[in-house]
Amino acid sequence: MTQHEVDAWLAVNPGTRFPVRDFVVWATRRGHAKVLDVPHWPKKDPVGMDEDFHWELLLHQRLTDTELPLGVRGAGGILLLFGQHLTRIAALTTHSVTTLGEDTLLTLDRTPIPPPSSLARLLTDLANMPPPTNWAANSSQGWLFPGGRPGQQLSATVLGRRLASHHIPDRPARNAALVAPAQDLPPAVLGPMLGLHPVTAAHWRRRAATDWTAYLEARTSQAHS
Image: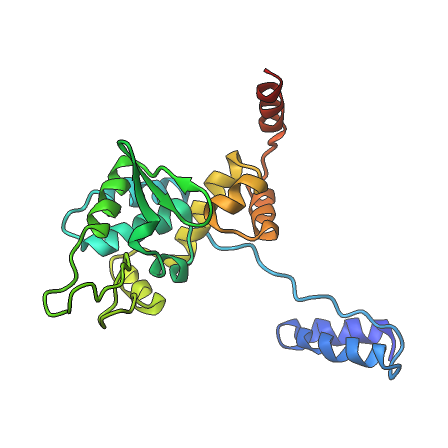
């Protein structure tokens, strides 16, 4: 088989034929085929939402609408502002929300973040909520989003359904939220702040398509001064 034949075969129905790459790589390494190249299936850019709609949804609806459940507002705020996976949001504990003087801090990974005052109030209220009256004392084990059973957090699946029922889309909201900080922060800062792998942080930095040379120059000048 020639490379031309491989390319022609892939072009017929690329959506189902690109997984043959693993077999071709194996056959080539074992000497059962000449060196052939099957590229990885090209990934599409993440689907985001309009920036104006994103901020409208965050600032004027989900954070300020007192008719929404408190947990939905808090989780929606973290998703829309910090672009966290639902699994990470559901696993947050009350210890993730701390107070330093008059400031409320949210720790998603290693770097405490001062959220906007409206979100800070929501998170403080969530952290101070007592467990349901039919639970034994301390049975919530400090989950910021406790589940329906004592000692367990809310599952990411249930959290996603609750957000969706209030028109908060998970993936588009997350993608839109990550572009904003990636425009201003280099991967070395973005990763520890939002809990992103260095490669993932670099990807979002490239997608933001901005030049942060000025940031490095400012840090260099600050260090010299």
